[in-house]
Each structure stands twice: as C-alpha cells, then as structure tokens.
Length: 237
Image 1 (cartoon, rainbow, N blue to C red):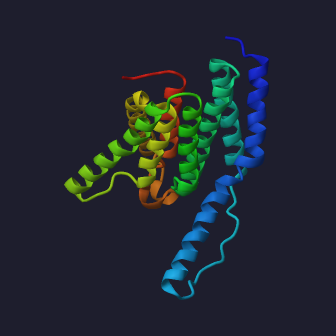
Image 2: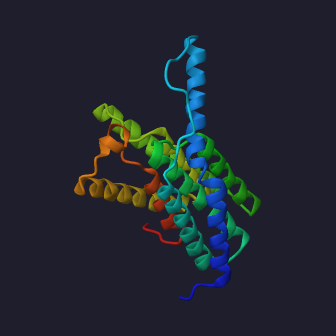
Image 3: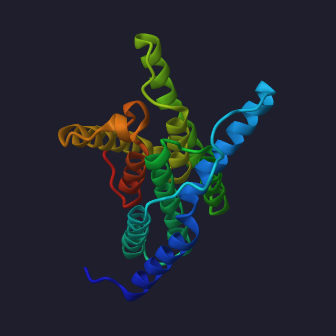
C-alpha cells in the first residue's frame, strides 16, 4: 500500500511537535513530581531534608530521537489506516500520550497521575461529545476494576504485589478511549507483551537491577502496545 503524501506530512508534523513540546516532558513531569513529594515530606516532617538540590534531569539524545521516530511512525500508521479526520486526530493524540507515558515509565518507573487522568478524561469527553460514551465509561471502570481485583487476590494469596496502582489507572485510561469491548484484548495484549519483554531482558542477560529499581520491568511499553493493537482494529476476543 502506497504511503499517502498528506498522511506522511501530518505524521512529520506530529514528530516535530513531539520533539519541540512532548519530549521535554519526559524529564519535566517526573521532576515536578519529585519536587511535590519532597515539599510534602518537608511539610510533614517539619524539618530540613538533606540531599542534593533537584536539577533538570537530562534525557539522552538517542532516547529523544527514538521517541520522535516512534511518534512519526505511530502517527503515519494511524493516518494511513484511518484517514485524516477529527476522530483520527483524537486517537493520534491518545497514542502520543501513551507514548509519552511509556517514555516516562522507562526512565523513571512512574505512570504519573498528572498525565494519566487528563488523558482518561479527554477520552470520556471526546466520546461523549461525539455520541454516547456509555461504552467508554464502562471500559474505564472495567479497566481499573479487573487489575485491582487481580492485585488484591494475588497480594492476599502471596503477600506480594504484582503491579502498581499506576497500571490500574492506565488500564482505565485505555478503557476511556477504546471502550469496554476492547478491554479483553487490551488485557491479553498487555500480558503477552509484558511477558515477552521480561523474557527478552532475561535472555540477553539484561541487568534489571542496575537499570530499574528492584528489578522492575517497565510496563509502559506494554500498555502502549496493547492500546495500539486495539486502535488498528485487531481483537483477540
């Protein structure tokens, strides 16, 4: 299938926007959260917290370029498949937000609420504006409730935690955009991608403990991949 010129130009435009405005947020959002946490701790402890002053976290140049290339490719694929329209622009916006979440998660292990919640509400409001958002409301609820139930069942059975609340809220965000019918595919795709990432890291002797806290495997890429599977129209169930 030939690449349409207008889709390519729009995708390049998205890449330029991501480079200029989105990539800096990979460092700025975690930094602002760290400052907020430190301020809250200082207020709670009512004492000075020793340590180095917070500074602007530097994001490697190769990482920035990789994110921009991913942004252009994702946009190009969606514009090619869905055409240029208001609904496509909205889903490109969601995909780029998920890419930013994946980048932040890779660098810091965070899935920050100040990004997840606006994306969740944007999905609900966009779908409500363009018709009935009941499926998306149920999707957001199911996206949070299923991993929440699994989390507590696993914790009560083993005493260990298998995921964070950030993951639960990110599933809810996916449901707010993709609807309740897409959630089984999102869950299965996420699990498959997460297991594949873990296996690859182990098989190439990736030093998890030296790169991520406590051997943490970043889940943001799995969330992005699961959403993309559904956005392009694939359904497992």
